[in-house]
Length: 385
Image 1 (cartoon, rainbow, N blue to C red):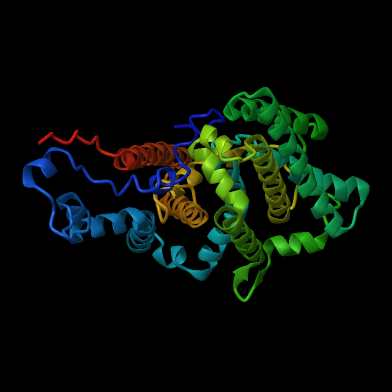
Image 2: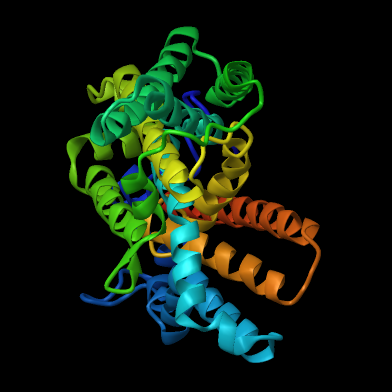
């Protein structure tokens, strides 16, 4: 169930009730109605009553908040049965988890913008690595001021997002293929420029202090992430552009018929994704203190896993900001907990990959269930008197 740019749309986009208004509440009215006669005024069909039962309500609540429950259980398990529960649940470790996931949160939230429209950007990690190196180079070689370097780093990401958008829109090729190719090209470009060496000199001390500092006990980067998350939520949920992305991801052909400029919306989505990767690159530079050409690409798989896994909570079957953040915390807590248990490093990659597979399988099942419920039951022809 990989999102693509074909007219079939993305499986994770718009709830079925939005795809076919009124269809989800349609009830079979064929043979049962004919056999039992007209329903009494105000009577509730049996299928509807079953869906309104307490068991169905509990099931829907569990589906909506299942990832939150799993996150709480993970914290409890590692906090109780871990080798160092006091350290795992300590304030220092919590701050470390929050600050270490700042880059991943920005990347994931930027990623779900094109994913909502049915496209997938596999180059975000490499763009973040490129922007980290580029920002370090602006400081080290061009000696630009602090704020200008940050703006230029984000701008570099937006430019490469623009290139991705142009290729996807003009060539009309699956975004999966396009961005896989650009990711490899970007990585080669970074290795060529740096000769495989990190840029460590000339980074402003203010940026490094921000990367390791905290305010009121909360890492400074978390405030940036919170503001970015609020902006991403507003764009996706409260603006006409966000609703256009949902419509395109649900059914591209139908979106064209209602006047949505599909190609332009997808093009802008890739620019936003690239700019988000640029911001992530700046945060990566602040946290690591160096423009490392090797580190960016490691974020891509985890970001994709978190985006799909986040669709299993809150707006079930639909990509959403809050679910993605909870998914990132779920992955981070489990990987940190496994590290405290002393497992080998390969377990972390296995856990992330397994989480991605399970998330895609679960989201696909939810999407099929929604389509089934949204499909109106065939009506039997009325019998002649």
